[in-house]
Length: 108
Image 1: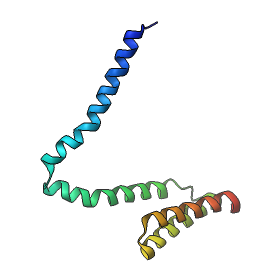
Image 2: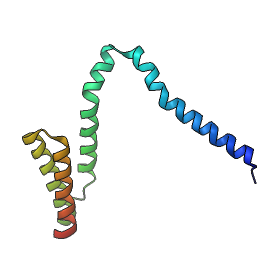
Image 3: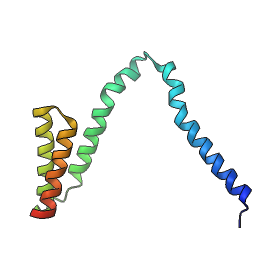
């Protein structure tokens, strides 16, 4: 059985490493300010991540069953349509999720 000093050392070491890892991005932010690559990535990376997640969701749908495919596809269509219409990310995500949950829970 480990003693108290060993446990406290492990806790403080883990906390210190976690704190340092969270602090590093703020330290290098000033060094990368004005970098063309970082500016370009900051514009394209968020949308790229959303597109990758969208493809992941659409690929993982079981299309052989209407009970599972229709709610997910309807939620995806509502999310995309609302976002194209209103340009409000929060509204489109909440509405699409609500449609998917309502259809999968109460209709199918």
